[in-house]
Amino acid sequence: MRAHDGGSARSGHGMRHFVRHYLEMAAAMLAGMVVLGAAVRGAVALAGGAYSMTTHPELVTLEMAIDMSAGMALWMRLRGHGWASTLEMCGAMFAPAVALIPLLWLDAVGAGALMTLEHVAMFVLMLVVMLRRRGEYGLGVQEARP
Image (cartoon, rainbow, N blue to C red; front, side):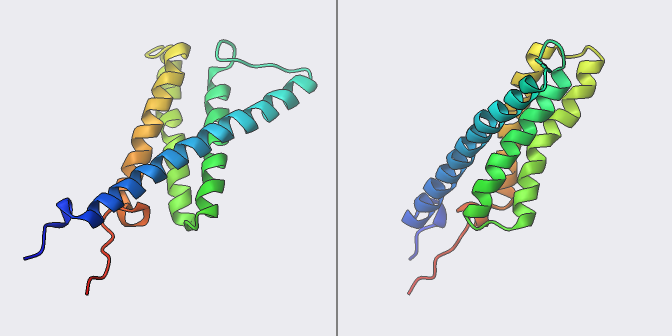
């Protein structure tokens, strides 16, 4: 009698792969945010401009989504993911901004809370997208058995 896949060694391997992939994508997002964010801020400063969460929270929020998406997209493409999966994941980075910026304009959320809410929502939506495509990210993939 075969064990249920939920308790099998293969299932444990799939979960480790899934978690590792999630953490790798989070690291790629962080790298994109740090590297591209510094480059953008440096270029803006060289041009004599400046912006911050206090003065332009919408711009900072969108820039962060772009920076994080770029880092993650690069990593996903290097890992062999297709464009559909990559763009879907990038959409998960922008969806919180699309939802939260109007709430900022309505004074339902403050500029300080905007960044925290955006990050939390990004990571939750990233998980949702990964679960939607669980086979691609390591869960639900069945290995052929003799």
